[in-house]
Structures are given as structure tokens and as C-alpha cells.
Length: 440
Length: 187
View (cartoon, rainbow over the protein chains, first blue to last red):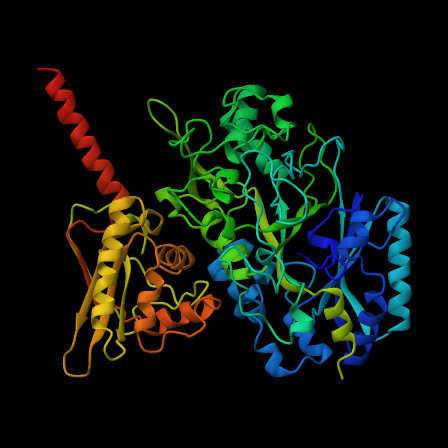
């Protein structure tokens, strides 16, 4: 059973928030960093209280650290060496493996995210703008008390209209599929993965292989912790809309092209496998039906949902491709940043996109595999293609839409997204935070 | 390797490789990635066998045979062409050679391979080899490192029909069968 009172709420529950702020932090001295961690550890929301919280409970702070951050706080070298290699190296050092090349290269990343001085991220959730101001002000007070702790950069996360459903800047509905963890009292919806073992996401518990994997040391620091892979992706809304117009004559045809890219209809999330020709709003919003499908039996050739579409690559649902799909899951958290671009407005060149944390227990097996292989491996299913939504495309790849009698190939697929940030963090449990604050 | 070279499946090709097994070091999740050659991707792992374990290892040949017989798709996710398991002794003790030819670099499907072997009980064949980590059940990175350290890259690879994937071969044969069936029906 998960120790909910010791696990940060971040991966287990979604607070009633519409706004969040990521503050990327540097510690000028170990002592200042430890004081800051100590002060914040008292208001970090644990899973138990946040899940039970009323809408007025505002303890929605989450704290996570880079490898350099743990070292700066004074964690000894022997312990540091027990942390997994991807985390020790950092995401930017592994860019080539990810496929983060060309304009996606870490040299071009924003927010000083690749700085050696990036030590921590604090995530502040708020129900509304006024509440966010209060949280930021309160956090600024903490910083005043700890002059050796500074904000390197900040990112404001805010939902874009229309607010009736959660979606990103291209208009794709989000948060339809999320892993369920055994023992949390939540049943997986029909067609979803069976509940995961807690060890897939939290350190110190048995994972889906039935064992507790070797953990970073000391245990008081690692137990109930998780790793977070952060990705910031700029979305080129104008380029995306141009692509739809170039490949669809009518709005209906354009909507179908958009759906073929994702594998689900844009505004409702209704899966193409279940409604290949026309959107079905009721189906899209029915949680008992919107994941109740597979590809292997229902759409083996991809006539409904292209094999290369985003949801089919990220969640393959096909035992011919993988038999360990339940070992490739991540819990996604995050949202959109940047101004909303209305449907009829020309692209204003503003910086807008998504900034997401993927939580898991094993960065290489879960987070890195999803991006480097299922999103960015051109050899995936022998397509010579990358994920048309999240892959690092540069015009040299195609988008194959299986169709009778002959498949349709949309050539010269340019990137609608650019990776503009990425980093690895360790999200400790509450005891782990206290341990870090107590280091000498 | 550029995609263009893959179009030349009808022209046999050979490729000599540097000592390291790659021209330019590119890292995967667990170590260097080896390039596609006319004989596609693959590995050759050579490890010394613990004394007295020869028969135990040979038995695992039958385990794999039975697993594939029971479920022909058993090894499907690994995107294999061929596997070869060899035991030999050229004077320095008994060694086990595990050679595989794949359509993808093995870095990408390492966990699938370990899970498949684990599910069929085959992982334990490796406990008969010297240096296999004692804590292999809980320490996947150590298992991965073991395979990595015993990989011996090729310095020459040849393909009579270079760069062709197993899936393409199967599709071509299916198409051929479908055409003969069609011609029969037209008699």
C-alpha cells in the first residue's frame, strides 16, 4: 500500500487548479538551499491531504531537484553515484539519443534550463489568477528570507480557451488516458491498461516485474520518490493550420487530417478506431467507451487510425509490437503556456506550447523509451516516419495514412512542434525533503 | 546509413567496420548504438561458461524451441531475423556465443528481450555464465551492462539482399503466394 502521507501529491492527484507556475531555482549556497527546502517542506502537499482537500486548501506546492541540486545541497558522492545514469547525466547530455537535433537541440533551449546552476523546480498550483499572485508572493517571501536562493526562470502554465475541455494550442483534447495505480481504489476504465504496480511510479515498491528494483541511497531519500522528465515543446499553430488547409479542401476534410495525426478527433478525443469517418462527441466524453478499443484486432492495418498517429505510437495497444506496454507508462502532468491564438487569427509568432512533466520510476525504461523509440525512431513499424505530433520532424519524413486501395502519403512533414526545454528531476517524498534539509 | 542505400536491396553489399563496431559514436539509452549494415542490426555476445554448466545451457535450447512452438509469435516484438546459440572451446575453456540479427538496434528493445526471456524462464540460462550479476532480478541496469560488456562487434558484414527487414521479406512472400493463388483461380 502506498504511503500517501509521505508521497508528494503531484503524480497522484490533480488539484482544482487552472493555473500553475514553474519556478526553476538555483542555490547560491548549500545552506541557503537547505533552509529553503526546510521552509517549503512544511507546505508541500502530500497525496493524502490533497486528495482529501476541500477547494480552499492551498497547499499545492511541489518540489523536485536536479542531480546538480542534490549535490549542491550536500548529498555525498557515494549516494549520488547510486542514482541512475540518465538522471546523473541530465537530459541535455542525452539529446542525440532522444532525437533532439537541429532546431530541437539543447543549444537552443529556453529558460536557462540547461544551466549547470539549475538545482530545483518548485511547482505552484493555483485555482485562479488571484490565488497564483498570492502563492508567488508567498514564495517570494521565502526567497527574501533565503537570499542565496534565486529564480533562474519561470514559466506560467494556464489553460487556453475554450475552457469547457482541456486541450493544447492545436485544439487537441487532452487527459483522456492516464495510468491507474493498484491499491488506489480507482478502477481502470474498459480497454485501459490494468492497474500498474506502485513501483512503476514510486521508488521502494514492487514494480510490474514483481520485485523492488535497486534503489538510490539512502533509502530515506529515495523511498516514495519519483523521477520526472520535463519537456517544453513550442507549438507552431500557424504551420499546423496551414498543413491542415494544404491537405484538406473542406473544414471536414481538415478535421479528418487533424484526427489522422492524433488518432483521436480533435475536439472530443473520440478514437478513430471506433468512429473512423465522423466525430462522435458523446463517445469522446464517455470514459467507459473512449478507451475501449485495440489496434491488433480492430484495426490491424491502420485504415481507421494510422499506425504512425500520436496515440497509436505512444500507447501501442498491440502485442505484436510490445508485450510490456505496462512497463512503458508515465504519469503526465503539465499544461499549456503562452497566449491563445484564436481560430481565425494569423500566427503572431508568439511563444506558445506545452510544458509537461512525465513521472516514472525508471527514466530509461519509461520516459526515454517513449520519446526516443516510439515517438522518434523512424524505423518504428518500418514507416520511415516519426510521430507527426510530438516527433522531431524536419521535412524529410512523411505521414502515411493507410487507405484502400493505396495508402496516402503526406510528404515533407514539417515539425508543428519544437523541443525548447528539457531536464530531469527527482521528486522526493516528504521524509526525503526533510532529509535533504538536514544534510550537513 | 542513409535511407538511399536501403533501396538497393537487389545489389549485394558488404561493409567493413572499424574496431569499435561503429563509424561515429552515437549513444543509445544504455551505451553505443551500432549502425545498420547490409546484414541489418545485431549483436554477438561471447561469455565464458561456469565450470560444469554445459548441459544446463544446452537444455535451454529446448526451452526456446518449446516456447516458440507453443506461441510462434513469442519472439515477435524483438524484430528478429535469426538467432544462433553456439557453445565452443578453443582451448581457453567453454564459451557461449549468442548471435542475433535484428531489424533494429538492440538498445531499443533491451527491456522487451529481458522481459520475454524472463517470462519463459530463459533468463536463468545466463546464471550459468561467468560475471552475470547476482542481483539480476532486481537490477536490470546491471543485466544490460553485462550484455553490453560482452558484445563483440563485427568488422565485416554482408547482405545478399541488403537492408531488407524480416517484415518486408514476409510481405513479399505473402504477395507471391497471393499472386499464385490468383493465377490458379483464373485457370
